[in-house]
Length: 449
Image (cartoon, rainbow, N blue to C red; front, side):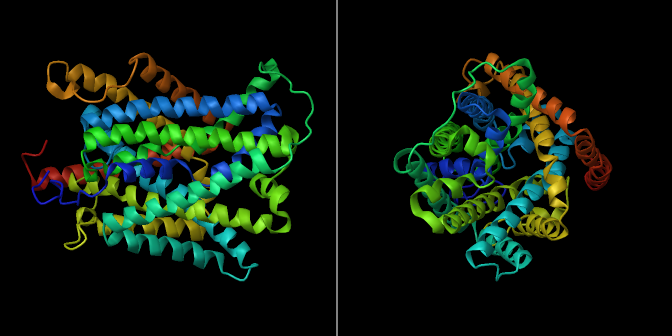
């Protein structure tokens, strides 16, 4: 760390512990929790199985938080998974993660959420807005905010994150304490019949998608104050907070609508609010979803560009992406690159197909990143690098998380074989650009590794 409050890369260190917690929470909670309870209930029918699925998903997220907390304590570098994979397995592994993050995972997810934001904001104005213009405009505004510096960008995302939590809290209060409980049939029981095991596995896909995103806080680790301590604490507290909120949301929906009613609706939040506020429920639900969407986009616009910045800093990407604005100390080119590609996906409509790749690609790299713990522990046995946070009950917890990732990737191939293959093809298309940038760097620096 430089003496003037900046990292060795020139980024400003300005993210405190409360803001780090909000980064974790904001990276996980998107718009999925407003829709996916109905998707899961439609597959499982039983309240007990619905809650079991969301509890199991939370456990997987917590195991992932253990892994990323240790990696963040060991390597407090910009870029998160990019830095871990590069250090454990070499630059190609890190580059393929960054390449896939830009083309598929981060930008594709952001494009889909931007369209959800635009649609729900348009609903508030009775269809008088241009949804493409709203989606692009929102992305460009957030990019501008983050180009002005991490202090402003993080402040905006923290405020939006708190408002998002307040909106979710309102749904929980209405469902648990205000709405009359639904009359539901007798539950089917906790143990599914053999024919329902496939349904349970399918239901876990939207659950795990809803829980994803805790890892993005690691992208800005170097910009956190006392990051080796605060990042680990923020991951654990943030993930535990989201698990609590998600379970309470599902309990609220199940109490107000019943398992059958929840599984039959496409608008669970609107239906829960309708039981309390009547005809204005649809607009209130749209406002809550729009708020959650823009809060997620704010967090993603802050964190994602740090991956491309780190790649460019290591001469594995366009060198301009490593540029830092003199005043704001922000990676402006990397931010604008992500914003531009996200706008292209949002306007082209291809984001829906790209979004279908996200689960398979995310969990491939989750599993590979988790395996870095084994590599780094063995490598650092005789050094002080073992100081700091260590994943509890390793290797069992780390191994369970890797097994969960393998199962999810396998289920993705089973359910969406073509899209999964396309996703991996996009990843492998990154090999030629990597070889080009690697060769160019060696030509310019003959002593490069």
